[in-house]
Amino acid sequence: MAKGYWIARVDVRDAERYKDYVSTAKPAFEKFGAHFLARGGPYHILEGQARGRNVVIEFPSVQAALDCYNSPEYQAAKIIRQSVADAEMLIVEGA
View 1 (cartoon, helix red, strand yellow):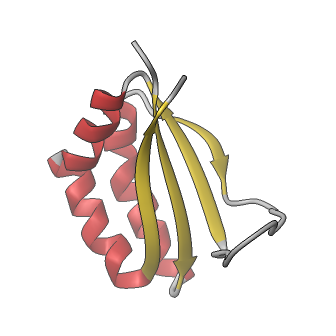
View 2 (cartoon, rainbow, N blue to C red):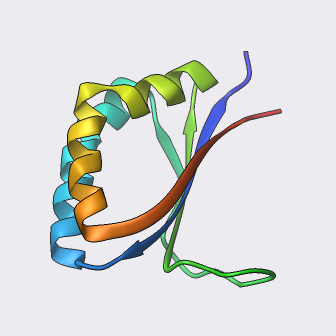
């Protein structure tokens, strides 16, 4: 079974409130076996427009990645994130 990966590019508008998103999302990530491969940190722009924060999260499967995103736990966190940050997010199937 192929692993699933969330890839998120985020510009945080309110760093203090973004902490609320992180703590609210944590139970969903734990429930669905999330493993953070990249969480912010320095980056190098090679092409296109960058955002200030780049995140890659590994899940045991694409279904687990989808279930995490659609879970009530994550949906509560998403409301907070959308109020304090702009983001693009997608799920990619691993090789």
